[in-house]
Amino acid sequence: MSSFQEIKKLIKGNNWYRQAVDSRQFFLWTPCQAVTDEFNPPAIYVFHKVRWEGFYVEKNLVSQAENFLAKTKKSLIELKKYKQKFIQAAHDLDRIFLKLSKIDLGSLNETNLKKLLAEFDNLVYKFWFVCWLGDKFDPEGFNMLNREIRQAGLSLKEEELETLTQSTELNFIESSELDLYKLVKEHQENRRSISWVKEKLEAYSKKYYYIENSWLVVKILKVDDFLKLFNKLTKLSLKDINERIQELQFCKQNRNKKIKEIVKARNIPQDLQNIFYLYRQLAEFRDFRKIYTLKSNHFYQLFVERLAVLYDLDINLIYRALPHEFIKKDISVLKGSLKRREYSVLLVNKTGPQIIEGNQAKKVIEFLHQTMSAKYSAVKGFSAFPGKVKGRVTLVIGHAHFSKFKTNDILVAPMTRPEYFPLIKKAKAIITDEGGITSHAAIVARELKKPCIVGTQIATQKLVDGNLVEVDATKGIVKILK
Image (cartoon, rainbow, N blue to C red; front, side, top):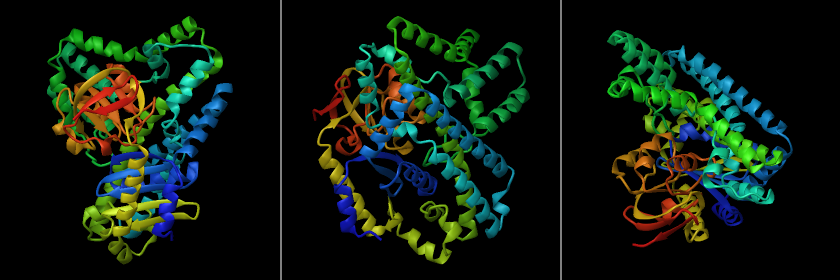
């Protein structure tokens, strides 16, 4: 058991890379443990209420990213091996998803529930053990890519860089959009009945029930949820519908065509082509991982609900547990521990994981924040898309803050995810704590041509609602004016 002084020494002795999101502990503990085991400790994970933050030794991430980039520059063999492991872990999750979907967890006794939770949690661990490569590129991925471009003697335009690093595949939001547009087209062309529409949307909802989930909120979307959007799309002209379908259907083909044109026009050497392919794959992996994250959280939620009934515990206390604690620990002891975890820290060191609770955890969190604030005195990061604008800051830490965001606000967030897209469309500029060139914020900002700075590490702590700021996304600097 590490003392507070030992933890302070650990914190002060390293440069940390920070991630943050609103989440339930139950959903994130296992991914945290898996990620740390894969890239080697130490790592520190903290929860204060529903706010999660992960702290990683930056040099460890950078060195592993550099090593993988060097291998990929020579050959795509390692990248292909990694992708195979990633896909296999996803297929294993698919099988347990199917198994769980056929079981009524509410009817299981304690023994069978624990057995099933252990099986599921183990597969989530294995998935996260192999799916975190893209995050390793976040701290220095921009600089690494720019270095390789300079060494090749090239100077690329912003739109060329966007094309060469953007995934050629549709993301899961675009895929769901395409499928829905096809249903609307069929309905409009053949005047299908409302019973036909509901039958098709029933199948659609089984495929995309998870798309509004997050690390914090789990919502099972059903026919009526999608029917509202379906009815809205039926007001579009058939011409507009066909144009959007064509755009989505030929997206991959068009993106690949543009890549080939740039490669030929710029005479990009094969080793640099390999690196650009790596970055496109990293963007694709992130979206692929998101699908399995949102589905996993759906099933974790079902376990949480059953555990709350089984042990007669407030569901908010269940959320504070590590899944495996219900498998291995005495419940009477665990109950007392969970009550102290409004603030909690998971310290993963070479000696193994350690959970710190209550006031001691609060002291660790405060010291981490003080250390990070002192290190990052200015708000600056990487330019994901250039531009210079002034505006008022609105902090959007999670879904609960979406309603306060107004058109032309400066969006400041720990990171963005697909559910942030409507806000990004309204934003004058985007600033995030974390993320790199393949992050969601960077990709969407380039697509919408919005000034964007990612990887500031500290924006959500240095900026407050209403701050008047100047965002120089060309230089990656945020200046507080008032």
